[in-house]
Length: 298
Length: 298
Image (cartoon, rainbow over all chains, first blue to last red; front, top):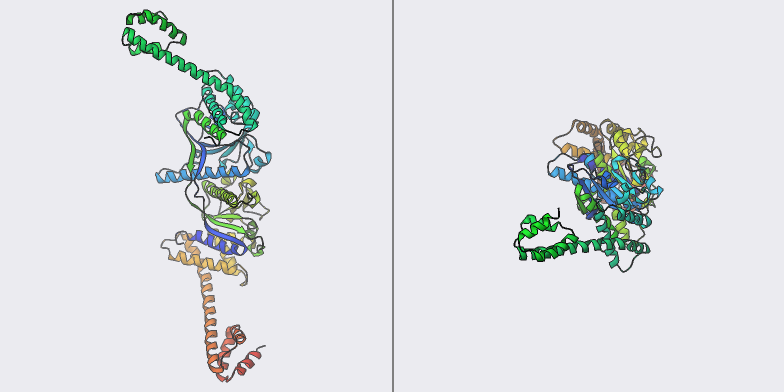
């Protein structure tokens, strides 16, 4: 009581005034529960985010947490997420104090991004959320800046490559169409493999479940050919590696130890070339034969 | 991983996309720290709040938490308080689930009221806080309803009896003037004694501190006469009780055991009457003398 007399005055006085009219609890303890933030991202200032990330890259210019919802977020769930965000802020302030560093600036504190398939106007209005076309023409909402949170309404996003990664987190048709777009991406697109891996992962998990919603059944059906593509690619990679390994062993037996450079040259061969080399090596008698064979490829 | 495949898909996929560009942590744990809400009030629906509470009574029609600040609240402190509010909401949801009761409605969840002496326009704007004249003409701000919080900027409140209890929690002149107003309230005002007690309390604590801010020194000076008033009132009450006690003992000795009714009659006498009775009892010889004396008062 002696440390903060004004605080104690305020608490005690308000308590005395209010107690005839209800239950008053001062210094009421809350929240020893450990909670989890789904995704906490802190950008590396040395690395420019990739254009291929589109809208995701724009959001990820700043420290953030993502809370993705499979079903439309409820108004109290938004507050629970805000609670976690502000507790994280408090942690960051405590940490800077512990490490005797300056307090984090407002702009350095993470933002909360809620990802929801759909959301009613009423809930958006309740938080004063307004369209933020500075990010993308539709589907991204911001509230007053000091709350440090925004909402991505996935099914409102325009169907552009920029929004693809978020639409992949949508439901039903929105997700289906996004999966088709991912499948059509050029093979060398930096995010395509990631997406296919995770979609494959999702398929395997859904497969293992006994009960599936009709929507999930459709999703599974759609994921199957993509998954098969991944499986075939994996098989084909495995086949090539297996042949290459066997060839190197035979060559070592037949013509002696290969230099690391020669090994690399062999490893770089296509499947067709490997098969050719397999036939040719039966006639080799020395390392020079292998060298000659490799050189004639150029 | 098998329980929430879509959640895990969203987390894993976003993590894989973002990890080249910074630090990604999924299922990041936060906030095992126990925190305190300054004042948590739940109204008793059976009791109508007193008009004498003014603005305080208007706010206290609903469940609320108060977070009073002695110095102007900072923008991150507002978020910390919101974090506590939303964690309290989460506790209430868990509690209703545990007790197999229906989920609390939005309107039943407590609001946060931040009490601050002053606040910059910039901070108010940052939260989209707008004047709420439905409570009082100035000094009360509300934000979009789903956040469930408001701000009382104490030094902006009009100097009316309605706002007195909040102004007493202000600083400097605002608090001084409120103290003067409290002193001038009629003796029988339902909240006057409460306020004087708590102000007396504050004075005693400030007195015990070695270092006082100049403003606190002024406050002390101002509290002194009020405190003296309380002390004198206490002395006077004590004196009356002491005399009454002694008189009852003497009467018992002189005229025999008094009935409970007669004792009550004596106890209800004013100080002046008690003194008269003290002189009269020297001539009493029986209980009838006392009865006659008491009857002649009417």
